[in-house]
Image 1 (cartoon, rainbow, N blue to C red):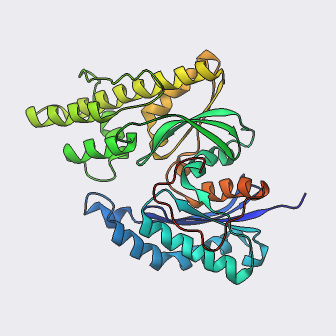
Image 2 (cartoon, rainbow, N blue to C red; image 1 turned 135 degrees about the horizontal axis):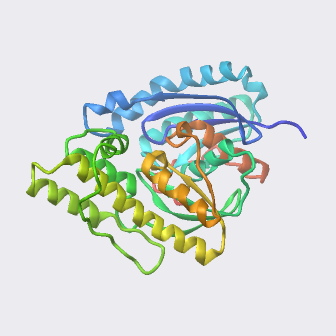
Image 3 (cartoon, rainbow, N blue to C red; image 1 turned 120 degrees about the vertical axis):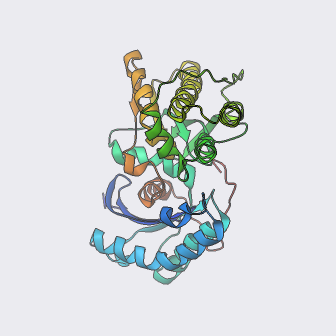
Length: 330
């Protein structure tokens, strides 16, 4: 069988990334131009600034990705950009560039759902992972449990009713003065504290999540007790939120009788969450985690998801638009 090369393009938030991936699992290049330093001073991503920086970086990053992979555009079988969800202006930069490339070199365009890309990151790290499995998705914009029935077939079986877990981490970090990006800073500070503060857990009858209660409790504690130990607060927040994630994940495994779990999204880089989820292996559950470098936004995961869509026969028209609120499976 001929090798298939997909060119992934990711610009949904504040990373301009282009990657060349072979057969959905082998990364030939994965260039990431991060804007974290630019947005740090604003305490979060400024959409207009993100879009401008994508415009400046996209051609340069694409050229570098092709050079590192030692291929030319003629060698590429499909152009696979993220078209949602994300910041609409940022998405449009990568998508417009991808559509122009597709037209110019007469190669198929295959739009990729960013969330499905996060799940596909596991296929790069674990060459033996195959559906079906349950995926615990944890990012700044999305949190939920996904039943991955096949490489291109997904069913959302539990979702957050309010904040995404990454959003909760970022808000807590901002309130207690850690700044942006919040997730890694809360994780680091929590290592120096003790989880000795009782925080509320929200229990929902189905597999949905709710993080607004714990987020509000932490914010209120910080306001009422300005001298509270921030490390203990972070450790307690992280432990409680992990227990909530684990509770629903175990329920999903039991309900669907699927003994394979994967995690995905930026928050899946959290060291404490990874440590606690790995304990499920003692209960004969196989746990798969992407490499840390593939947890945050990158084009390799998009190229991987694009490959599976491409071989399934999916093609996108050149009038494909950005869909900022795109749901999984759409």
